[in-house]
Image 1 (cartoon, rainbow, N blue to C red):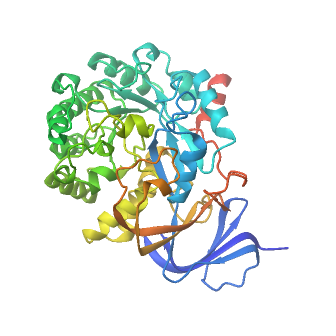
Image 2 (cartoon, rainbow, N blue to C red):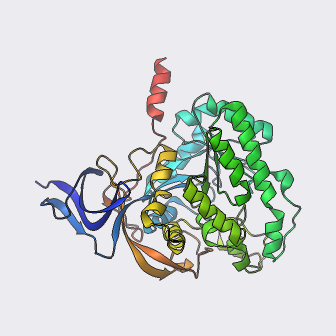
Image 3 (cartoon, rainbow, N blue to C red):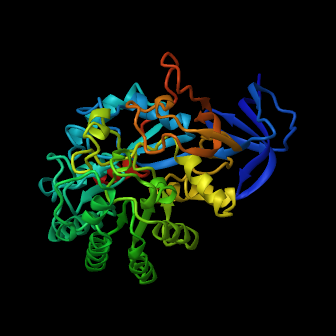
Length: 457
């Protein structure tokens, strides 16, 4: 009988924030032992990581739009989770839009789970949605295991997911505060967006969604959290002008967390040519100084972690509008390249690999309450990635695994390549449909116990 199902040996394993020579023993999908690099263990499979590669925890991406069911031609669970596995992402949390129906009821959540069940190449959790019609009835979705509730303060871009007013945001925060829930918020103030009918000029598009739209919305969120005692998370922070507000709110002790995205950390407005609608996202990519301030805010902890905001659409919707930023879909497909893009940017700025990895692993795990993920540790899930940190590669959108071959990262050179991904100790095979998928469907930690306790009362 073997000691383990799997043993992975490597000269550099990221353990407790440091690189160590180690062997990692896996049984039943769990890391059951960490020992010396050459420990004399037996296993059904033994893998030796090449010397130019490192073993790291799987990335956790808390902001992914899968769109299935309803808009599966934009993106589906099979293709999204293949892209995730290929990019070293072992856990995703799916957004409640742009699927049809949106995940605003328990019935819609069950449709999502049914669609994902047979196609999950990585672990998948789900966000619920807070729209005007669902306010006052968020608790059943919370009890069913969603990780929190997505809300918009400006139009979402799809009619079936309307945005909340300022008063409705306060209502959502007060409602979720009563049961310990969280509201995650697209923070743009519709009253600060400029009238825009579209053009090929990127500068016109940026001007239509100015910094003031973000700073005003974030001021609204801070005020609402202060008034209600709720928990709020600011999605895809683009504007560095909001950072001092956020620092003040955190210093005050308000329960506010913040993410930014790879595209805000890698791209800059001056390098986006007119008509290049593959770069369109809301809020927009801003200038170089803004980008560098976001990096500084990650380093000082003002921004908590990084998520992809993977938001694909069909090729026609994304780049079929003759370069008109007004008509093109606003979303960037970055799930598969997020790890390499972030680590390339960190490398350029002299940020240590192990420090940058925390923004993709331990920090999002803590945010989502995934206490057995985000680190290589005994008792944790064996979500592991073999990664070549010095290997450069060119991104070709046609070769990425997500459904439609469009990405703002197309043509860019990144440094750092995923060579192998394990999900719960099983190797993910992103290119092979015949392999049984390795992922599980996740519920918010504690959801089942809370529901059982409520029933007992």
